[in-house]
Structure formats: structure tokens, C-alpha cells
Image 1: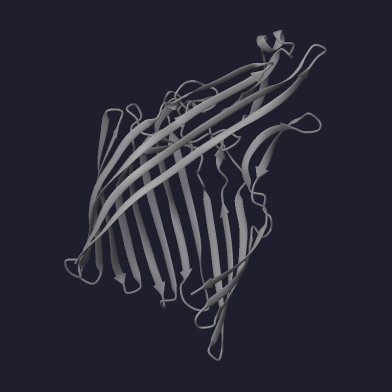
Image 2 (image 1 turned 120 degrees about the vertical axis):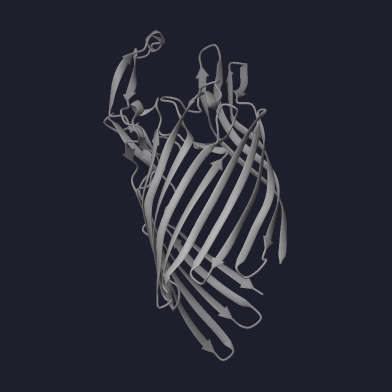
Amino acid sequence: KLFANVTATYSRYLFNIGNQSTTDISSTDTSYTDIFGYDYSSGIHDWGGKIDFDYLPNPNHYVRFGVGETYHTFTPGVNAFNLSSGGTTIDTTFGADSIYAHEMYAYIEDDIKIGGRLKINPGVHYSAFIVNNVTYFNLQPRLSMNFLLKENLSVKASYAKMAQYLHLLTNGTIGLPTDLWVPVTDSVPPIIADQVALGLAYTLDNDYEFSIEGYYKKMQNLIEYKDGASFFGSSENWDKKIEIGTGTAYGVECFLQKKVGKTSGWIGYTLAWSNRHFDNLNFGRTFSYKYDRRHDVSIAIVHEIDKRYGKKNWKLDLGFTWVYGTGNAISLPISTYRAYDATSFKEGGRGFSEIDNYVDRNGYHEPSYHRMDISATFTNDSGKLDKSWNISVYNLYNRKNPFFLFFDYNQDNVRVLKQLSLFPIIPSVSYSVKF
């Protein structure tokens, strides 16, 4: 009646971005090469252990409980500059010091069957996070219920309170994506979220299943960069460049699935909103989160063809997938003006610099993301060996989805917005043998 799993884990995450430029300098007296480099790195090292128990006292109860701990080492942001010019070398490193933290938790939950129609899953999760001589405690109750209205129709509802000790610090302006994972500190509290959900599920002839679910989440202690701040070009730690605010996320998810038969698959659609509010950002007005994705669509279809010749079987699986999503929310300037720049003038420059005027934070969306993938898998079962060939094409119609946007000048010296894309159409072939 009692089962246990003991697990030890190690993981490492590293983010690194940088560049290096060289300039050849020559004159009648001397010649040398200027080298300028910049590097930014951030990372997380985790060591962890946990023990989980499953306890089945009788057919109407399924109890799960356990404890665990993770030892984190965070390097939230280290800047490195190096300059070599005419025999002079400068190499400097600055940024946030490493942060060490312990994260501990304990939990218990029970799947309870009441009669033949009602299932209840109550639970509680208790966590602690120790960092910089500060300890955060959070009690997180959860409850979900599923009630069978009819044999093929059920209603479900849930509530969960959650605490997260990692923050995602996103760059809301255009340019190379630079999302950073940063920890809770003595001055940055954990994210606290409360979420409720309500849904219906309907099954037709055990072949088709349809579900619709609405959800609402309220979040506290979210972080965003201050206006004009980023992880570049400052000796300040990241926690001096942020504001703390609140957020909401809500939406409706629809799902239709065909589970049996030669042709199976699903269609999923989500209509969602994700908003943020910070007193000192966007003039105190609520704005969209960077990953606010209004529409999300996924379609997947698999068709099977089976044949048998004597003792040999072969099967052909044809797959089709199409996904669509609203582009990320970004901040774009509505105008640009020139400002007098005394430093530029003294150095022989134009004497002015261009200043972008931003009004709405995350007021625009990047172009939408969509692509189509297809595959064909031929499997030949000869008894002892199961051999298969797979031919697939990623991004069949070569959609140029945006990786990031940036400003540049065209041939007429007019400032324009451009897009950089990754992963065009990619065909692949594979062969596998199972025994």
C-alpha cells in the first residue's frame, strides 16, 4: 500500500551574450589594432534531493506526500569589458555577486472518490526559501473537484495558491531577447498567485472528447525593468533597476480530441489576456505583459495505414501539425526627435543625438507566429526487430517567424523596422531499430 521514490538532481543553466569588434589604426608613425569586447553572463546551479510517497489505504483514496530541498547558486548578472589599444590593455569585470539559497518544501494531497460521481483532490504545499539571512514561508492550499453530471458530461472546478521564488525579468523593448531568471532576495519578495478555474468536459460515443475551461489568476510581487533600464551598461545590481507590481491572467481554453480510429488528433484554441500594473511604469496605467498571447491555436492529425503479409506487419503513420500564436507584446517609439549632444559635438560629431519617444509600454505586438509540420513514419515489424524510417519537414511553407525586431536604415537613409528570423523550412530523415 505504500510506495516511495528517492531522487537526487543536479542542473545547470547558463545565459551568455556578448560581442567583440576590431578596428585597424594606421598612420605614418605607427599601426595597431583596437579591440573592444563586451560580455554578459547569468546562470543558475542547482543541487537537489526529494522523497515522494504514494499511499493507497483503500480504493477510494490515493494519498501522495513528500519532502524536498534544492540548494541554489545564482549568478544573476556579470558584466565583463576588455579593451586593447596601442599596447594598453584594460580588462574589468563587475556586476551582481553570487546569491546562495535553500528552497525546501513539504506537501500532501489525496484523491478521494465519493460515490460514483464525485472526485475531490484536496492538498496543501508548504515551502520555505532562505536567502541573504531572510526566510520566506508560504502555505499553499489547493483544491480541485470533478462531478459527473451524466455518464458523458462532467463539470470540474479548482483553486490553487502558489508561491514562486524565481522571477523572469524580461526586456520589453525591441532587440535581442534577453530574458533573465533572477532569484528572490531580501528586498525582492516571492511571486504569490491565486488561481481559480471552472470547466466542462463532454464525451461522444467514447470517440470524441470536448472540453472548455475558463481561468482567472491574480499575481503579486511581479517585477519589471524601470523605464530606460536594462542589464547592459551599468554597475548597479539588477535589483536596483526594477519595479515591483501586480498582474492578472485570464482566458478560455477549448479542446476537441478524437482518440480512437485510423485517424486521430485534436484541435485546441485559447483566448487569453495577461496584464501588468506598476505604479511607476506606463504612467500608472495597466499594460500587456510581454508574453500576452491573445490567440493560440494548435491542430494535430495522425492517420494510420496498417498492412499484414504473412507474419510480417508494416505500418505507415502520416502526421500533420499546425500552430498559430499572437506575437509578443513590445514597446515601440511613436516618434523620434533630436537633442543637443555636447560630447558628440566636441568629438567632431554631428552635435546631436536621436531620442525615441515612448508612450505606451508593450503597446504593440510582433507579427504572429505560425508554421506547419508534416511527417511520414514507415514501420516494418519483422518479429525480432522493429525498424522504421521517418521523413519530416519542419515549417513546410517556410514562414519567417520573428525572433526579434530592430531599427535600421534603408538605402534612402530612412529609419525602418526590420525583423530577424530563425529556423526556415528544415527537412529531416531518420532511421531507427528497436529490439
